[in-house]
Amino acid sequence: MLNHTFCHLPGIGLANERRLWRHGLLSWHDWFAWQSGRRLPIALSAACCRDAEALLHRSQQALAAADAQFFAALLKPHECWRLFFDFRQQAAYLDIETSGLGEDAEISVITLYDGIMGRRYVNGDNLNDFAADASRYAVLISYGGRRFDVPFLERALAIRLPQAQIDLCLVLHSLGYHGGLKKIERALGIARGPLQGVDGLAAVHLWRRYQESGDRRFLETLSAYNFADTVNLERLMFIACEMKLAATPFAGQLTAPPPAPDNPYQVYRQCLP
Image (cartoon, rainbow, N blue to C red; front, side):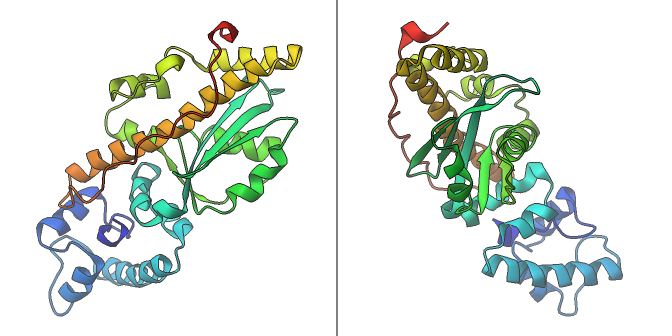
């Protein structure tokens, strides 16, 4: 999709991008071919045209170098869904649970899922492994991660997460879906099985009870909840991309999402508040 993208260029927003597509400029190659002696079908100053062409050359180089950050810095956050097509194999879904929302809150559990393998990180066990594992990926996909998960992780673990980000909260809001993750899952028909109705407050309760009792059933249930949050992001990513593509000449280019993996953690209903 990046090769079809023009809205990261100076003077070109979404309306002008759609106008370019309508006139047959469907790719960067088409832009360069059109530029040979013809005026673009959009109102763009000569200076903007020169800057846009120079940036397109740099875009080609960045895509060849698999530099996701280059595009993330130029695209508006709700347009970063476009990264998914070219960086799907270098992306990981991310979700964290915390002990609360106050200044003294700490991370309890993190799940990192790359579409094949899910990795769990637990406070007091292996949190220090997270940074090295996350560094293997060029793109992090989250729900609300730009505002919450990533800043919290950077502060709590004293690390930097410089990866490009796709925040599905912003992407889905631009499609008219508002509210928290669970609300949007329900609106889009994503079920949670035995975790239906479990929310972030329950996650805080589970962590507190695990710390107080040492009973690993509480940790197991919390891990199941966090795993579901993370894995469901893959379904949401595909749904959001299909909706975005439907308004472009490139509808139908995305293959169906793989089946969701089985949750490796057990839910103990008696542990839930």
